[in-house]
Image (tube, rainbow, N blue to C red; front, side, top):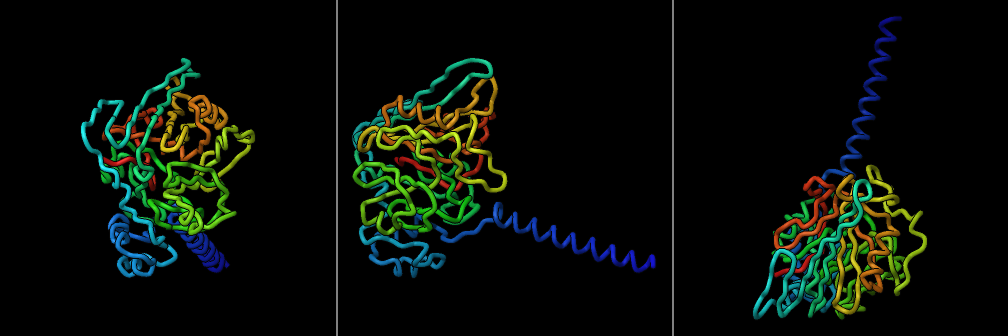
Length: 339
């Protein structure tokens, strides 16, 4: 009898161990293991500049498929550098001015003690909307591929950069970057940057990626929520949730935040709020974040990935203090302005 019980116990423990291993692997596969769908994105985009069909791009890029990399006829990703800096450049630790664009950054500090708050505002005016570009971590598109915002910025010669929407943490949403379609799985309220310098909040479920590209969309972000739409501040921010996946903080409460707003065509404001650091910066609620953009004169504003991802980089320097520890967290993508 003892032998039988011992054997049965071994079987049960073995089954439990196998089950746990399966669960742990599934979690690692979902949240940790890199899955590269398209490698050498910049090279593929450059090659696509001389093509007119997605099938030709797929042939030039073995990792790509027609559904993963559908390029509009006129979409040339290298247009991110179509308006080069010319003439005199005037720059310091907080400002950059050239014939192509201007960047002006300032730090705002309010309160003290547990109510201390610190955030950074970048006021940017472009001459060409395609100067605001996107880049992927490790120059690859897929899931769980991450690098520091500063590293992605350096790899793309960025003058200015912020973390993006962390597209690689999820498998849905519309992902259009530098005129190229990478994902077309509508899921939430998205943000679109157009080639004419405008920026609009839109419902992903009411359109397609190709329709957006045909309408002149240059970049999309899929996170949210929308903070301001058509000059109206959102009123339902106290209950909104975007991602409720394993390990995520709730959207509610005071947290580090990253967001973007538009004041006029080709005139944008980017805000990065530090948080979770008593005595330095508590972070802000979504309602407070929306009010910051309203006070800056933004007619539309959108919340991006936040928390430990919230990072602003200027001229190779991390401007803010991520989580109060001067330590970045890896992310999957950035928005940036190149040299």
